[in-house]
Image (cartoon, rainbow, N blue to C red; front, side, top):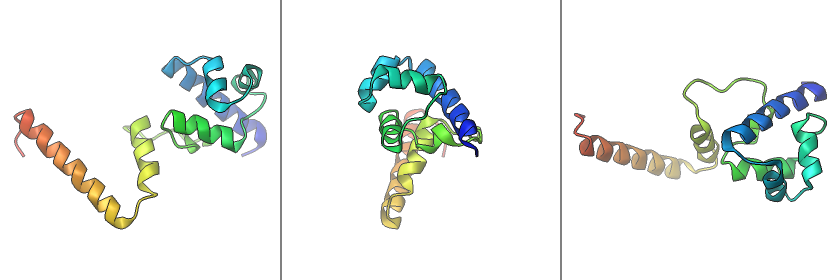
Length: 119
């Protein structure tokens, strides 16, 4: 994707995040360790953050960095939590993946039991 296209995608996703999370440019500047004027250039689509700043931003909001720069739309049903879990899941060993899956099943079982749902 050409640089202008990347900036446009980032600008849209970034401004959407600020609105959704009700975060100010000043707060983002503090999170990323940059000047508010730098964040303003991101918001206007004039520049994009360096990778280390993008990673800080993504980590703060529990999002994969790709959510800011990939042009494709998120799959239906994939909220921010799901993307964050998917990103973390990829880093786990197979044994840890199985443990996490088992834990999720136990939590769902307990929720169904609590809510009086049949298995």
